[in-house]
Length: 222
Image (cartoon, rainbow, N blue to C red; front, top):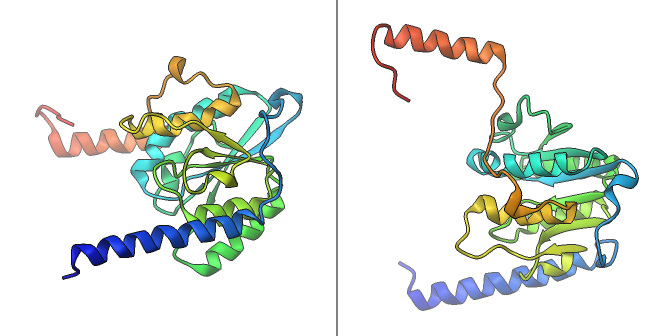
């Protein structure tokens, strides 16, 4: 069993190492901190939202995706998802394209980095609002996007050209993520932040068949 003092020392070493990596990679990122967001309505803008973690996290990200996509008709929103959480966006009308990324495979990172560069995104959004990620930083670097949006005031604050103020520490994760919608003119206080899933007719029919087969004549409880 590792002594508590050693654990604290290792944790401090990890944080120091991350700060070094963040600054080294951040120096490679193009563009300087922007005083304000672009005029989104001037022309079409390609925006990428990075959220390649768990299925529950993507469900909680759906209101943010909706809010950004609806903020301006000129925004074309793509999402970089994982194999496990991409299914959440099936049928979602607010997403132009879903790209799959497997962070455990080096080949997936190389392939994804090349694909992101080809897309020529105008803006990229860091979806990891609770803890900075080295992988996220490298993906943001790969896009070459001029506008990089994320929660400011953390170890990786300097990588963003449009840092946003964090929500209170005790706020729900949905509201933590909601802060990244502010550069698009979204009013966090007046926006509906309820998650949503889209179910097609075949899925609904299959669900009804399952209900009938498993509980004919009995009360149905979800």
